[in-house]
Amino acid sequence: MMNAYEKLVRQSRLFKDVSAEGFEQIFTAGVTRSVGEDGFYFLQGDPATHAYVLLEGRVKMMQITPNGQQITMRIMTPGQTFGGVALLKPSAGYPATAQADEDSKAMAWETERLRDLVEDEPAISLNVMNLMHGYISELQERQKSLVTDRVEQRIARVLLKLAAQSGIKIDEGVLIDLPITRQDIAEMSGTTLFTVSRTLNEWDRDGLLKIGRERVVIREPHLLVSISDDLVNRD
Image (cartoon, rainbow, N blue to C red; front, side):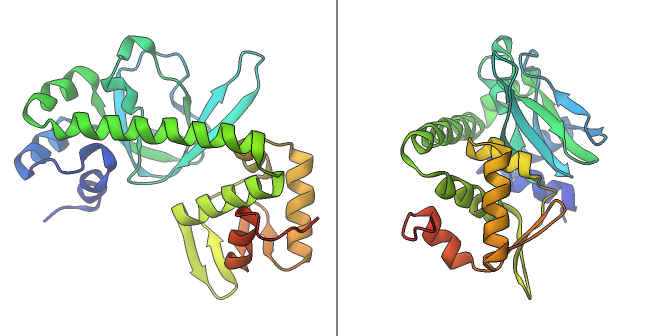
């Protein structure tokens, strides 16, 4: 019977559809790596030597622009894959930085070992391509949103994405079970901290959200969806 870590790895997008025999080899080949809060699994530009599946904690994926601006791309939760680009072109380096948002543990596989495993489990290659396609589509959608969508829509979509990823139903609504800051939301929605604070405070006053320190409860999920789809103008 699989333990909790094996289940997380088995269900990850990196190892979807691999055979039972192949998975046994894969899990045996992995090593666990623990990183304390604010520590790094890798930095943007580092040689892509390992691919990871998160087992515990939270990991923030960030990019640093040429002018030094930090942009939060996504927040990884247990069972999610990061660093998968290692299988494609390790010498190109990681395109983003992976920083632990809290004490975290991940399972890691060396690039060369994974490439050996791909010979017997070609599903891994397809999974990596699907992961990369998802990231590219996400970047394209973000770029389009920055050009065409109102800032309220972008903020609403970030909150809905986080809720879909880690939302917990409670009496007050849907709790985003992540230590998310307003700066994180600003970076993920492509706007300023001031604009995010103003918008969240307005939504809190109106009863759409309940805002606490690094805590967000969505009280009216359907209304937030309407805002994200530009069906409600709250200006």
